[in-house]
Amino acid sequence: MTSEREVYIHIQLPGTMQIVPAAVLRVLTLGDGTRLGRFRYGDRYLDRADAVAFDPFKLPLTREVVELTALKGVPGAVRDAAPDAWGRRVIEYRLGRAPEDFEEIDYLLNGPQDGAGCLSFGLNAQPPAPVRAWNQTHQLEQLVAVAQRIEDREPVASELLQHLQPGTSLGGARPKATLEDARALHLAKFPLRGDRANMQRIELATLALAARAGIHTARARIERVGSWDVLLLERFDRLRTQDGYHRFGMVSGLTVLDSGDSHLDRERWSYPLLADALRRWVQRPRADCAELFRRMVFNAAVTNDDDHPRNHALIRTARGWRLSPAYDLVPSPKVSIERRDLALTVGRYGRAGSIYNLISQSQRFGLDEREARAVIGEVIAVVRQWREVYTSSGVSPADCEAMAPAFLPEGFFYEAPPAG
Image 1: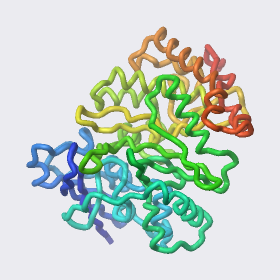
Image 2 (image 1 turned 90 degrees about the vertical axis):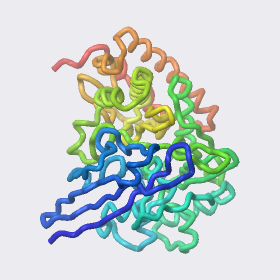
Image 3 (image 1 turned 90 degrees about the horizontal axis):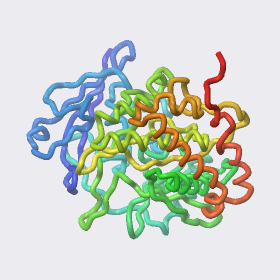
């Protein structure tokens, strides 16, 4: 028996407030459980002079139907606009349904209008109106309380759930909501009851440390809410204008790598492969590949092993695609001091975040060994200042001690691969 679901995909055109229907995605579930996606751009959209491809390689502007069975039939560039893990939890909670009762299209249709990038979804060709009303900073206390009730699986009034939008595909599984202040839109990241440290302050401090190391990072600040800290990350996929917020296209590292979340896709989770792909995608490949190398070195130096492909992204500006600002940079203290593996392959010797591995394929990033070692030296010099940066960012002495094992582990300094 075969079933079919359909979703219309709308796009906010680059540099405008205009939202138009752009494509239709049909997902068929076949008798053996296989999902077949059929994606096609609309003729009227293709006839527009300002039409842009969601993905210039997998979804180029063509009148042909694109068929795919990977990713449950949903193209990567479309999946990137879907709610994240927290957003899915909010949707399930709001609708009172278990995760197994949802298909990917359900999450697309019930996701927020403020999803990452410039896409939105509906049941017909009528585009949604641009969002005009946003959560404000004075609502933070209420938003934190609602998020904690969901975390504790306690009932929440439906009118309050409307304020806690299901979340973007940025920011991972932590509770969050989109928030506006006088300057921009932000992703407000809330604390978890089970946190053993102030993760909001720690993430703020790590972003500041990365910026000092020469990395282009997302702008961030802390907003105090009662006894809680909330981290506000400025949305880099939005641009405030007199008429409203323009939306930039966005794709995750998963899409750029043509990969999925499953462990079966891990062989493509690779910094060198991502650098290779950047050369096809971005307008300034030399600069972005060098930036990616610096981020890889920094992640190794602070043991950020949550550097999976969803925590890397490209955004499409008026000049073309480019590497997004760095985000979700959080050290991970480890017991072992001999080896620290990142989520992505680093070099010839796998995922080990060590100097010998970092320089082993530096040419893939457009750097010779001398240039690579210079970058490593610059990053190390800055990361040695982590206590100063953490303290000035408001991280407590106790939290500094808790995070200390993450920084510059002994294995990072190995100059040759281990024997065997």
